[in-house]
Image (tube, rainbow, N blue to C red):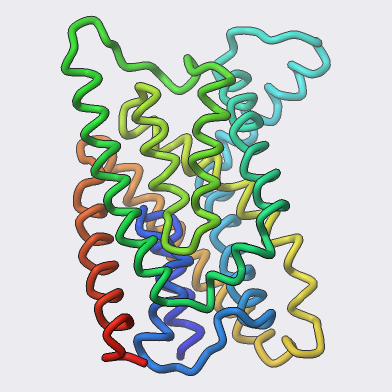
Length: 282
């Protein structure tokens, strides 16, 4: 039951801009499950949940991915860029994936130590909400000026993709949302909410998938064998809920913004911090 609850939580919170890692660390601590969030077995379990999420994203955006991969191959064969929409989107995804890949390798061992501290995760969750509110404020401020147009995703430049990629890398910190950071960065680069969300979800797919595949062998380590069945079932549940989540969010961001998610993170982070800092929950 614990595994299934965490799977549902992962499938929803990975794409909702509220930090899946943050919730995966905080919930067991708040409910006194006695789970060592810093152990290899728990991290391996979380990785399989991420694998389910990545597969759900691939299925949801399957037509986009087929077009993007086909356009990238043609671009490489041709040896030059064109104005093709899918090709430009594909290279933006490449540009955005490089920063998080490099930082993930360099900071992996350091960041893992934060998983064992719910108090620190609470602070990051609070900051996650603040970052989203700041992003919305900057967006309104930028476009309050006359002559400052919005751009479509394919109109972004490579440096814009790198910028969004670095923003997405903030999600290495448990409590900071991958999708939230990437959407905020897209808004600052003059995307509308729906385009910023689409870029964030597409950009998250190769990152989540690569991380899951790299960590997958840990499931078969001697100290992790007991979570194998729970992890497989959890991955399936996480995939189903992630698919439902991205379907909802793509509609949500056509007419709404990040504010409700931001206020939730601020409230949840503040309450969790108070509970852990005051030893109400030890």
